[in-house]
Length: 220
Length: 220
DNA sequence: TGAACGATGAAGATACTATTGATCGAAGAT
DNA sequence: ATCTTCGATCAATAGTATCTTCATCGTTCA
Image (cartoon, rainbow over all chains, first blue to last red; front, side):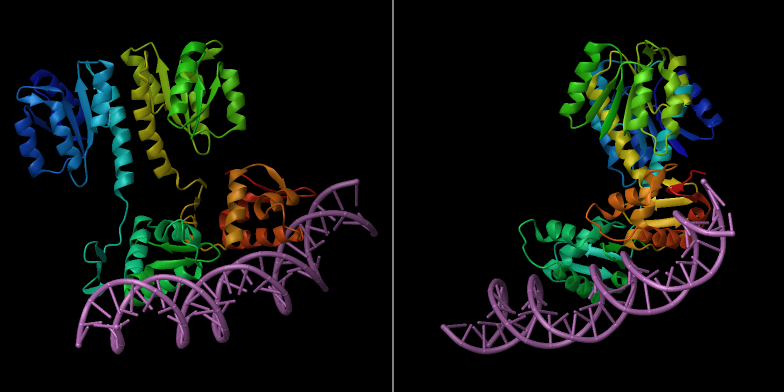
């Protein structure tokens, strides 16, 4: 687990680093925002500990960048400003937790471990790799081949992908894809499902019917 | 989302309750540990907010019980004792987060929302040891192997898991699983029980017949 | 021991789904 | 304006999976 520690007080940074390393983490230190940004462009971190007060700016300002990464690290803010509004602000900005200095290292590690555990759980969300959707052109690429999908086919497939691994009832599908007002037959769904299965090999193999329930698109 | 608020200061409890309800939560209040324990045996909560100082004992003491539940709620400790050791102690005991009074309600809600989101991600698979049942996907895994269950089989098993360790009569099962309107034979339950036992080793060993009463699924 | 109860397996009834082709209407081409 | 093409929907039928019942045999309890 790689951790980015953004902290300019050398003494504190050193103690923290040593403690975390003792717990099996690999810690990289940055003393300024500029340092941190450089490191972020080079390395993928699992977590970032950010001091709010830094020589070249405000710790807040780096949070959006951290959380904008494809697989964002766990972000903890650390500050001596313990005021309520600061905490709310930090959390709303996207920080995962907010520790008031003096930071108790043991507490830091406990909280960190939990968030990292959560993160690995979340991160393992699989996708349907072979399928790529182009919303604008309504074109789907399955593996090598491009396929043209009609409007409803495309929206149906989109819907299944949004609800990967969920068993979806025909009624639910009609409501969400066709719209609440649609008064038609539930068989309509069947027919469109068949279209998708016929056009896309990946759908053929991964879209299962759940008897007496509906359909489920399974991740690979 | 159901929240159990264990707090004896009436004024504080009231304000907190109102705030949470305004955010769409269903809040049940308890003023003592005894109250809380009674409520826990009746209802399944998604989260518990526990004050440490309570009239009839220490808030810590209820945490193991909370976390011992099959599908444990998110547990937040709240206390005016903000000392470092207390926080570490609370977290190590199993509390998910630890708020120091005065609690900022907005912060509470932000943190709560995150933990509840995490919980629902994790919770997809309630289970009995080797038995994992994913309600959303309608998939059952026993040990290594995935098993295909028909609709009624799945719902029956689901029902047994919700009523772990309870002896359930055939009539009760028919009413709750098949529905009030079902007019068929009680032996139908027998047959479905057999199916489950045949398909799932864990069920075979844990689903006991209670002579002259019905069936009971026993926890491992 | 016998009367009540539960387990089991097979088969019929039922409910659900896949598949095909027809119809209708909209968008675009001529 | 008319024709052509394509997509959406529906209806009919064939094909499956599931549910339920029933008859029989084994087991438990009084």
